[in-house]
Amino acid sequence: MWLTSGFLVGVLALSLPISGATFLPRGANTTAANDKLQTWWHSSGEVNPSTPVLDGNVRQSRVYTVEVATTGNSGNSGDHGYYDSFVYESIPRSGNGMRLSPTNDSLGGNVDGVSIEPDVGINMAWTQFLYASDVTIKITRAKGYAQPDPSKVVIRPTTTSYDVTSKGQSLYIKIPYSANGQKLSVEFQDDLWSYHTGGSDGLFVQNVDPNGHNYVSSYNSTETIVGVEPINALLIFASAFPPSDQVPSESSNDTYVVPQGSVTTLQNVTQSTVYFAPGVYWFGGANHAILPPSVSWVHFAPGSYVKGAIEYNTTAPLVRATGHGVLSGEQYVYQANVADGYTNNKSDATSLRMWSGSLMSNQTWICHGPTIAAPPFNTMDFDGEPVSYVSDYKQVGAFFWQTDGMEVYPNSTFSDIFYHVGDDCIKTYYSDVDVQRLVVWKTTNDPIFQMGWAPRNVTNVTASDINVVHTRYPSANSVVPTALIGASPNYLNSSATNNANLSSRIANFNLNNLRCEGLCPSLVRWNPLQNFDNFTVSGVSIDSFPPNSTGIGQSVINKFTNANGTLVSIGGESPGGVGLTIRDYYVGGEKISIAANNWQSDQAGQMNIDAAYWGHWTIE
Image 1 (cartoon, rainbow, N blue to C red):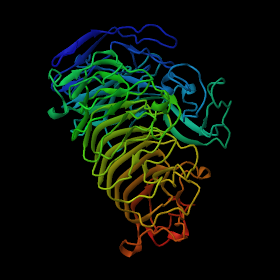
Image 2: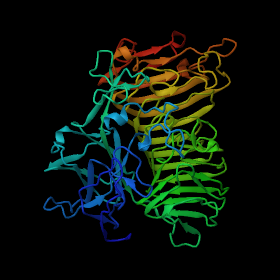
Image 3: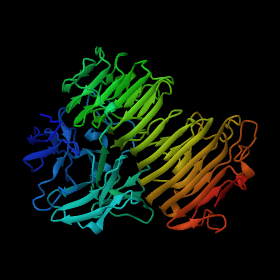
C-alpha cells in the first residue's frame, strides 16, 4: 500500500527466475512519506544485468542500495533514521540485443551506437526522492566491493562540494536542500572504464571479453583513451516537493486512474487527466499511449514506472506532464517506427518519440519532474512549436544514437535538467529561449549545443550554468560535431559548403558558465549556414582534451558561402565587426586569450578557425 504520511514497511518480493536474473539479499524495506522526505520502493525489483526484465518488473541496480535520512536523524548508531530509496538501473539496449522488430527476437540491422558497453558491463543506476530539508544519503555497494574511501570518490559536477564520510561498507553524503534540487553522479574510482578508440565500427575496443565486440588482447598506442566513465554509474536525483498546482487530485471525477499492469489503450478516456499511481505499467514494444483529445494532463506519481511513450492530441491551451515517476522506452527497439509496426526502420517523421503529438504554438506545455529512461529515438518533437516550460527533468540510459534532448521551442524555459544523451543535446533552433542549470553526460554523437542542420533565424538565446560531466567522442567529426557548441552542415547535403542562406542570422546568443570535466571535445565546431552576430561565450572551463592526434579538441569554423560564392558573415552587424567573443576561457587551468598567444591549433586553446573569419572573432 501507499501512505501519504508516516512510512511504509513491506517485504521485498523475489522476481520469477529468468536467465541472467538475480535478487538482492535484502528481506524488507522501509520508505518515508512525510512532509520532509518521500522515498519509494518497487516490490517487483529484478536484478538482471543482461536480458529484458519481466513486463511487471523494474530493473534494479546490481550494485547499489541507497538509504536517505533527514539531517539530525542520520546518526550512525544503527542508522535508524534511514529510509530505503529504490535504485533503478538501465542497461544498453535494455538487454534486447540489436532487435529489428518488437514481435520477434531476430537480430541484426542498423548500427545503433552501442558498441562494447554490454561486453564490459556498462550500466546506469539512479535513485530519486523528494525532500524539504538537508539530507544524508547512505550508499552501500554489493558484496565483493571494497570498503569505500571518501578520498577516492568523485561527485560530479565537481563545482559543488559535499561532506562525504564512510563507515564500514557504506558511504555517506550530506546533500543540502535546494529548491532547484540536486543532480549528481557518485563515482567510485575503483570502478572506472577507459574508452579506447579503434573499433571496427568506428567506436571502441575492449580487452575483457574475448567473445565480445571489438576485442583486443591488449591496447596498442593508436587505441587512444578518449573518455573515462564509471562501469556502474550511480546518479542521485534529490528533488524539491512539487508545487500543489503540479499534482492533480487522484480522486477527482476528472481524473482517470490507470489500472496497474498491461495497458492496451487510453483512447477511450473521457477525463482531462490521466494518473499513473505508484506501480508498474506496460504498453509493450508495439504500442504507446495515444491520448484522446480530452486529455491534457498526464501525471506520473512518485513510484510509478510506465513502459511506454506519450502522444498528445488535445487543443487545450495548457498541457502538462508532471510527477516524479519514470517513463521508460525499454520495450522499444532502436528507432521504433510507428508507421512500420514499431520496427527498427528510421523515419524522421514517424519513429517514436517519448513525447509527441499535435501540440501547436498557441499551446503551452509544462513538464516538471519525470525521469525518462532508455529512449529509442529523439526524445521530444511536437507537430507545432508549443511554448515549453521544462524543469526538474531527467533523461537516463540513452545508450543509443538518435537519443536527442528536447526541442527548445520559441519563448521556452528549460531549467534543472539532467541529460544522458547520445545525440544533439540542447537544440537551440528557436528564438527567445532560456536554458539554465543543466548537467550533461554525453556519449558519442553530435554536440552539446546544436544550432545547425539547416539555415536558421535565431535571436535572443541565453544559457547558463551548463555542467558537462562526461564525454567520449571516438574521433573528430564536423558533420556530427565533436564540440560543446556545434553547428552541423545542411541535413540535405552535408558535404556542401556553398549552401548557406545569407538572409538568415543567428544573433544575440549568450552562453555563461560552461564547464566540461574530464576529457572534452572542442569548444566550437561550426559549419555556418547563415550569418552570425553578437555570439558571446563567457566563463568556459575545460579540464582537458584528448591527445592532439585525435583532433577531437580542435575548434573549427569552416568557410561557407551561398550558391553565388558570397562568404557567410561573422560580425557583419556586430560592434567592431566581431561576431564571436569568448571570455574567460580556461583549459586545464590555463587562461586562453589572443593576448597570451596560446589560442592556436597547436597550443592549449586549439582554435583552428578559417582565415576568412580572422578579425571577426576574439578571445579575451
